[in-house]
Structure formats: C-alpha cells, structure tokens
Amino acid sequence: MKKNVMIIDDSALMRRILSDIIESDNRFRVAGVSRDATSAVNSLLKHPTEYDVVLLDFFLPDLNANQLLKKIEGKGVTAKIVIISGILNQDAMEVIEALECGAFDFVTKSSGVSLTGNEEFTKKVLQCVELAAFSDVSKAKTTVQRVEKKREEAPISIDHTLKAKKKGSVRGEKLVALACSTGGPKALHRVIPRLNAKLNAPMLIVQHMPRGFTASLAARLDEISKVHVKEAQNGDVLQKGTVYIAQGGAQMRIEQKNGHYVIRVTDEPARGGLRPCADIMYESLVGSDYAEITCVVLTGMGGDGTQGIRKLNEKNNIYAISQNAETCTVYGMPKVFYESGLADEVLPIDEIADAICRHVGVQ
Image (cartoon, rainbow, N blue to C red; front, side, top):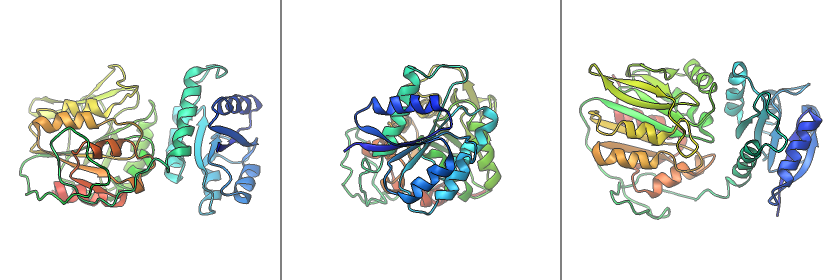
C-alpha cells in the first residue's frame, strides 16, 4: 500500500515540483494538497491518521511551521512533518524550534537554484520522505538496558539480552563524544538540558546539519541548559562543563597543542556524504591520553560513528552508550552501533544524561 503524502505550500510551482517528486516514486502518492496552513490544519484534524508524511513550507501567508505544529500537537495527528523551505541562516533558529516542537526533519531549497529537474533536491526529498514514512517499521523492539561489551567485530543479535559489565571508577581526565543525525536536535533537547552544570568533562557533538544551522542549535541549547553550549570554533580549548557542537558544512578534529586539547575545524571533504562526520571526530581522538572517553550514539540514519568508535576502542579506554530503538526517531546509527558489540549500555533517551553524569562525575 502506498504511503499518503500531503503537500502544503503557497507556491503553485512548488506544489507542482513536490507533487512530481512524490509521484515519481511508486511507494508514495500525493493524497492532499493545500496552499495555506489553516485549511491544512483543518484537514489534518479531520483526518488525523490519513496522512503518513506532510511536506510543509516553513513560511505560509497565515501561519508558519511552528504555529501549525502547535495547532496539531496532542490532537492525534500521526503524520510526520518534513519542513521544506528556502530558510536563510538568520531564520535557522525557527527551524531548530520546529524540530524541538516535533517536526521530523527539514530539507532546504538552495537560493537561486532551479528545483525543476534538480536531482540533488529530488534525492533529498525522497530520502527524507522515506525515512519519515517507514521509520517506525524499521525499529527493532529491544528490551536491553545493559549490555556486556564484546570486543569481536562480528555483529551480535539485536534480540540477545546481555548482562551488564561491572566497571570500576576510572581516574584521570575524561571526555564525552556524541553522534546523532535525523531526530538528533529533539533528542539533544532531552539530553543536554539535563546535564549537571559541573560536568567533569568537555563534551563534543557531531549532529548532521547544513552550514548555518548548528550555531542556532547551540544557541538554543545554551539558552535552556545548565552547561555552556557553543558551536565549535577553530582553536577552542576544551573545557570541562562545556558542550561543543561541530559546525555544519565542516569537519571537526581534536588535537593536542601546548598541553591542551583544542578543536580544529577543517574544510576536508565529506565522508560518506557527511560533513560533519562523527567517524572523523572519533578517529581524531585515537591515541589521546584521556583516561576514558564516553561515546554516545543517538538517533539517526546510516551508521556514522561506529567505525570511528571501533578504532578508538583499539587504542583508548572507552565507555559506550547507545539510544534504544523505542525512543529513536530513526533507529539506524544506534542499531549499527549496538550490533557492533561495542555498547556498554542501551538506554531510553531520558536516561542518557543521568548515565553520562554518573559515569564522568561532577567537579
């Protein structure tokens, strides 16, 4: 059965382009079209389970995306909302708020670029619709809360329940390094604000996002958190109790300089289409003299982070936490990580902040 998609955009041309993109894939069909938010909200509330995905222009004549999301919140609407708009960098904070309010993901329209026949834009839209439409189906049901770390590289069964590994306290400097993608902004809003202000370690985050959006994400999290959150800048010296979010459209590495660990922001190419890429961040930590590195993998498509953590594990002492399937927006990155056998704990999102604080301690 085809998945039903609703398109909401005040531009007739954009509605046509998006309709052609959706109809080009036989897994989907355009089941509704609206030029304004008010009629779209009425349709969604009248038929709360009819649509699987909604493609929503951010700025509409009557309401913006955030206002629409608030009108359908708690009303039983099951559709995943994907925002598609030519958002400028100065509007990025509003997109972050939309993701915080429950939007599934967003796709940007490049300024001054024709979208008719644009293969890159078509690919991004269909990929996002696919993830939104099928993400629940892809989630494996796991009851695992604690797992014993396996050093072999062969995957282990998702359904295999393992006993917790007892680990003693580790003395010395520690670091937290986290990776996330689709659903990450919302997940981070349920982790970072719960961290203790005196977290006894710096924290690095790679969240897959375009250039210009990570600064707004950092600013929003800093506003609502006890720890200091900032977009990583070249030359930043890592400080305990500070969270550094990798810049969108760049890579982040960590290097030792004058007895301190500092951030290096590079223009090196994307790896696996990702910039920033979590594997690159983790690999840059291999051989560092941190007594222990707590690695965390949250919601997201693909498998970014696992290979980097595997290499890190060969040279460094790590403690690894993976988000469980039930609380992921997309159970991709945590699934690959769990199957690698590297995870020490598998936890629901609301328990991850406490686990981090418990493991690294407070100053």
